[in-house]
Image (tube, rainbow, N blue to C red; front, side, top):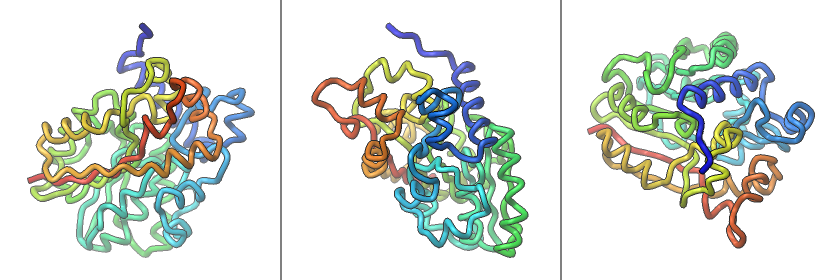
Length: 292
C-alpha cells in the first residue's frame, strides 16, 4: 500500500507550491511545460488552468466579466473552482472572512458588497501570497474608494480571528488542501457569529479515488487528492455545529479542466479504472450552511 506523506510534509509541499504560484503571478501551461517537464504541478501546483487564461477559468466557474475587470492586477491567478461571493449574497455592514485568500481575488470582490461599514479579512499561510495581496490593497482602495480589506498570515486550522466576530466565511478551492479539515470546520464555527453563514466553493469526491491518485502529492497540491467525499464533508460540518447544510455539485469545472487538456487532469484520467470518467469521481461543490 502506498504511503501518504505526513501532515507536516503535506503542509510544506502546499506552501512550496503556492509560494511559487505567488511569485510567478499565476499558474500557466507555459510554466507547466518548460519548468516541470510537462507535469502540471512539478514543484508547484494549483486548481487553475494550464492552457487558458486566469480570466477564462474565472468566467467558467461563474465570475462576471465586470467583477474581474475591477480587480487589482494579478489578484486573479486562476485558482478558483467556484464563486463563493455569489453564493454568499453579501450585505452592507457584514464582516467577511476568506480562508486561503491567496492574491485577494474574493476579498476584493467582497469589499464593495459590504461597503464602508463592512470589513473583509483574508487569511493565508503563504507569506508570498500575503505580500502579493497586501500590495494589491492600494490599487483596490484607489479604484473603489474603500479601506475595508485586510490580510493576515495564518493557518486555516488556527485562524487569527476572534471568537464570534464574523458574519460570513468564504473559501475557494482551499479547504481540500488542509491536512485537518475537521479542525477547519471547528474554527469556522468558532469565529462565526450566531446566525453567521458559510459560502464555500471546493473540490469534492463523489466516490473514492484510486490509491495511486490519493498518494500523489502532485495531485494533492492540485486540489484533487486531498478532496473528501461529499457525505464526509457534510458529516464533519454537522459535527462541528453547522446547520442548514446545502451541498450542490457543479460538474462544469471538472468537465472544463478535462476539455482544456489540463496535464494534471489528464494524468488522473489515465489512472482511473477502464470505463470510468473523471466526472464520476470529482466535482466542484458549492457549500452553504449557517451557525445556529
